[in-house]
Length: 173
Length: 143
Image 1: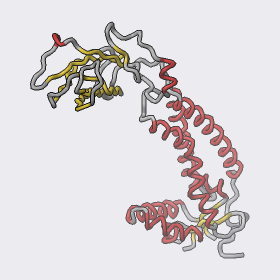
Image 2 (image 1 turned 45 degrees about the vertical axis):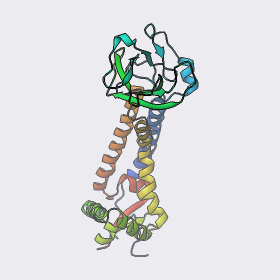
Image 3 (image 1 turned 90 degrees about the vertical axis):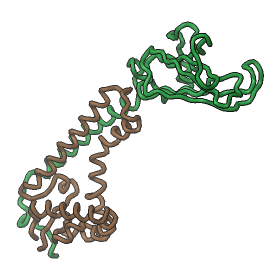
Image 4 (image 1 turned 180 degrees about the vertical axis):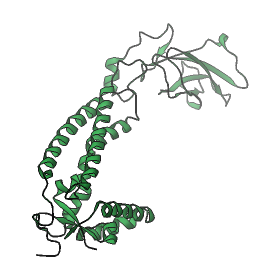
């Protein structure tokens, strides 16, 4: 016998734990596996009926299936890649610019953008009905935009060469 | 062979933790790779305790130690780690079914219960952790 040899009869007191350990392994394995499968399947699948939630990870096809613009107020355009957001240009009589030419855009969100809101406008060197080149942009962000709250945001043409503006990006999180 | 007391076992874990911190994990890891072949961790090596394979009475070999020290703990924790990291991947979004989160918490609590039983069994007649029974090992004191 080597110095490490174990003689269960003399050295290790006999106890009934071998069998208990096997039972515990089975119980632990089965219950853990069931809980894990439930957790993975339910955490992996997002709910879509909660008011303040919107599934931004949906595929484009899924977005098309659920695209709904019926909630947007009159005159607002629902953003093509996020049906949770709608926007419209403000009439020039509704706002005043400070140092530069500007446009004002009104944004509204169906479920809210509770983590952040970001928008960007591209400036073109030609009127909207003509082909032009992008010559600049302006962007703005908000810490949050709550459900059905309207945000009025001005975008400046800091080059003073813009003749038209185009909504380039809206990111609601 | 003398079976290591719970005090020895806890002491070895404490030494391992100290060495791990002192060597930023790297030194301990390399040392552990070496000592595992002799049925030891660095802490066990310093305190002269050794993991024995109950089936043959010989020191646990590298592969056996790897199963006992790494694969079994990983296997036991993977049930709550996978859903947890899935939730982390979804940035703890509130847009998940709350039943899934409850299942994750229950899986973690079950793991915690295992950890408690595992520790308490150290004070049993054979001074073996639950994981020792599953791995077929006992820890011997060579001092």
